[in-house]
Amino acid sequence: MQNDTIIIQAPASKSLSHRTLIAGALAPGRSVISGLLDSDDIHRTRGCLEACGITFEDMDNGAVAVTGTEVGPKGGNHDGKDKDAAPAQMYFHESGTTARLMTAVAAAGRGRFRADGAPRMQERPMKELCDALTALGVDITYEVEQGFLPFVMDSAGYGKGPVDITLEESSQYLSGLLLGAPLSDSETIINVAGKKAVSWPYVALTLRIMEDFKADFSVQTLQGGQWTDTPWKAIRTVEPGALRFVVRPGGYRCTDYRVEGDWSNASYFLAAGAVGKKAVNIRGVTADSLQGDRAIIDILAQMGAGINVTPDKGVTIYPRKLRGITVDMGKCPDIVPTVAVAAAFAVSPTTITNVAHLRIKESDRLQACADQIAKTGCGVELFEDGIRIDPKPLPDSGTVGFETYGDHRIAMSMSIFGLAGIDVDLDNPACVGKSFPGFHDAWNIIMEGQD
Image (cartoon, rainbow, N blue to C red):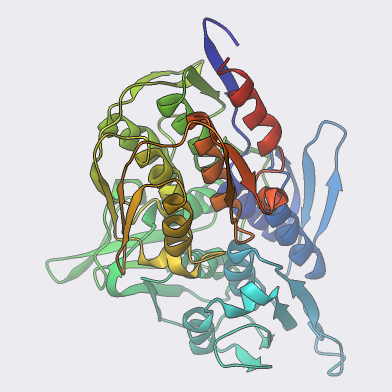
């Protein structure tokens, strides 16, 4: 702690860690990835890649060396010589990102793959992605219920498209298809369909990694009835029916890569700076990041928090009296629990909109936020696609038991209530290991710094 400011080092980006591991695994040769997030979800993605024939080496300096494959993910009978070969087993546990990305990536390989997950993951929809893969020639056999895990895929790689996918339910369907498409023997056209688009920044992260690992693609927008190449970094909003991706064969090239800090996991500490007694400085994040959850500093600024950004010392948030706002968070859904809890410290109501897709995360995050925030005495109104927080004076002592639903983001966001003086009792504090195993140690620094 320096100059009455609490300093926290941000963990590596979970979204970029998934994507970087996958790109390295699909690039022939050896890639060294440093700064990789050490979390349950990343271990799941690595385990699935290992099941598909990829090898990894943990290096003394904490980096991971990935030896990519010449032929893409290998399933059972990938060489066509053993029709009775067991499928490559991909177990996702509760990682939705692993499930969506690795299902599409494995299907771009050759052979038989079995996809399965924990009970909650088996309840989360996969039908739209599976239908798109079926359109590309992948044979999918469901073991229990159509459109849900577990299922077995038999693939000879992506066939000729085009294929349609929406960004209504999850952007990860599109990201998975994009990551797999460079392995195809022919050009793959992926059209964005549907009525609305959410979480575009996560697609931008996928395109960044594809570009950094030298995949050959272009993004096209419909202009005057003609498809026109458009720089992907210039795209801010997505109009379904007017955006498509053209991915050409050629695969990826190996490269050494450092993963940047994670704005999603930094959000809890930035919120602490806004509602606690001391300013909080987050190191390891960059203000020009493509991560959608970088929006947390804009949202906290709208609410009245003091903010200072410097290239060499990261982002500092200063405590101020917060006011409520109305905010569309369709592009940054993972920080909705953070903002909802920060809103409970404000002096006027906050309304969060366009986040219906939060209902199919590790928990129904909208319902979870409503039920748990209400325990503090705040008024809460739930909509189909959003939530309104009507702040009331928060308890400054006593214990409140919060249910986490096994959801890391609920556990970490509810911890913020400790800054009001509440003794926060989480029913499953260990669930933070999904994305941030070191969270509680870092949070103790925040709490001890309030004295």
